[in-house]
Length: 425
Image 1: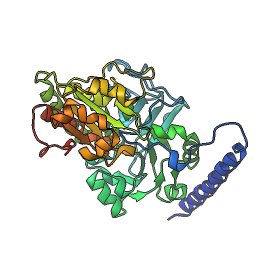
Image 2: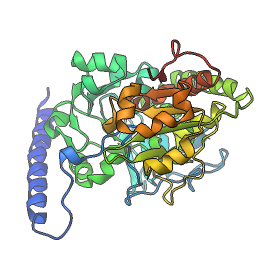
Image 3: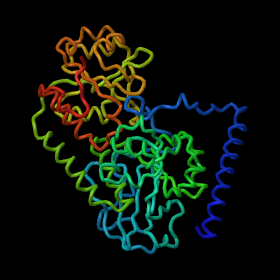
Image 4: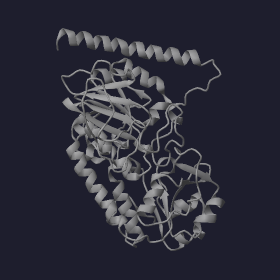
């Protein structure tokens, strides 16, 4: 290693300790104030289907349609010194846009308003670039991936080699090849999203930290990572209104690492599978996805949630369409078991969301321990209680497979060939 590189590393390591001291000072300084203290590690919400954030952070408001900065393909956003070529074609995603420019430059616009310019290796960012645009310098092949749902997308395009650090441990990872890579330490544990190992980030020469929106609850962590010279990219795939919009984020990540062809092939296969299912007529059968929380209340998915939309795409009907929330970022709606039973008693199929704090409820006996009311439901009497596990949330690459599972369930198939659905016995 050259003398310049050594000096740079020493500088960055010194910055690590300055960051840690700054955070400690912030915590101590705020401890006596009237502001609410940050949640402890035990209180932090888990990024699972059962316990996903129920409201959008105030720091950013993702859009529900294409971003205002999206422009007709023949025009494109004007960037100083760069010649616009084309926009990435998308089918369902509305939380990102990718624009291509001569020389390999790519401009990313995210639904939260953040903008990023990907600068090819050996080239410079153009003079006069808006200071609000974050620069990501290729090669982006040493990534700290904080979050669970996007690991599967890198795996789907055979690109786990660019992930060097992860916020997941092997036992928490349901992407088989990624879990094996973590066990072999080909992907190292880089700390939780809220408590990253800053020194390891520096020593691993991380080129970009990819975070999900949970990081917005700990903005100091964003500041500290960027103080180390590591850009932070926040992804909003969980706010996509269509299930295949979540999967389409594979194309954005592919743009970061120049693997668009692999991502396009994979995504087109998943879209074709979904559209084949959509070609069949609706069964008219009702399906409700629910869980029972620690207080004994039922939780159902809001009518505009992606899991609710999966039911519709698969040919079913959500009996809780009347359930809406003022904040479109929420995913779960609480109600008493009596309120839930009033609708669920005549539902054709019930799917229990056995993940997060509701994990382990995978048998009928366990379910009845949660609420004996369920024994009177028609779905229970007819043996049509099913369950999905925590892997469902992580496998954003296989949401079309979940659609296929629900469709097979509605057709009366058993669970032998299904990916996510299991009949509760």
